[in-house]
Length: 411
Image 1 (cartoon, helix red, strand yellow):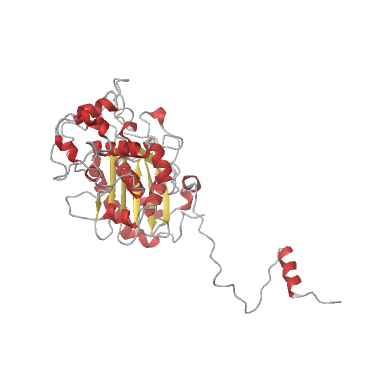
Image 2 (cartoon, rainbow, N blue to C red):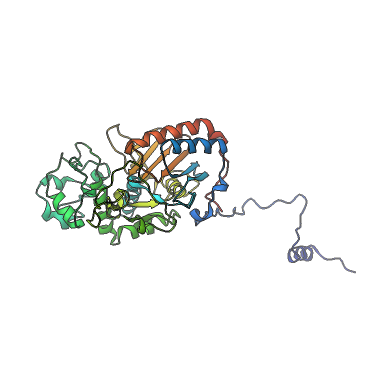
């Protein structure tokens, strides 16, 4: 009987589901490695059981109990790999917090808006030097409201750096009861600026509301639509949504929000109710748009940071020049673009605080990024970010070496 040739042996092995090992033979080095497959539904793929360091979790639980925080979500990444993602406490009275639970992000929204502006600049549709008002301004449809000529000096960069001349002294205009966006702008643009644009800085939600309108005007799309298509979509972040104002408006999978027990009630921003919890109707969160309106999960925030940090292996959605513009440090008195602060050594900070939520993003020189988002107001308000930062420092010192070496971003 004639012996089968090598080709027939190979076909038999393949068709039979077996394997054929040839001694001394190695695959060609020119064969490309299989592509990395990133998780396309991160929030639905992660569970609390995937991340468990009992000693570290006990420290986080103790911190939340001390501050009377009902629930929080923690995400930790290193060098663009998601190492840890876990929910603590409760998202509402019946549902435990999970890594995929979405929460209001408060002023972390400003970082997201800044990324949207940089995307438009990369598309050649505007520049940081673009004027906001005046004949060549993006929002010149509002010029008739202006009486102070210093408004014509405001650029997109001034808005990003809180240097436009706006002030919240006497009340934040974005969270004041106006019947419409047009009424708010008519009133605010009719006032004199607090300082000449570019000569000083004062934190301003109004500036980032205007940036949201700039994104709409330049892109020709609603702000939320542009951000989902041009920022979150390319970053594979699927569950960022603009928040609702009332409990019945919360999105599927979104946490409930809580005030401290002794928090005073207030009238609703829209006049519908004489008395509400401040986190549910006290302010027009949806109307703040890119100043404070977004909801999202801690792991997807970590994914987005990995897409704008100038490193791999996660592919950035911004080019290196845009990343440098966003993260260049000038001095302690100059806000970075979207970030609160970007120190030259790589420690970057973005915080958010609002009725019913607290959030902090910290990246560190060793490549770690820690994110915590809470569903409860802390009595310290925006200063609570310092307490979260202290928690991160403690956790890093004690448990960084114990974090799993893996990547939950991948399939």
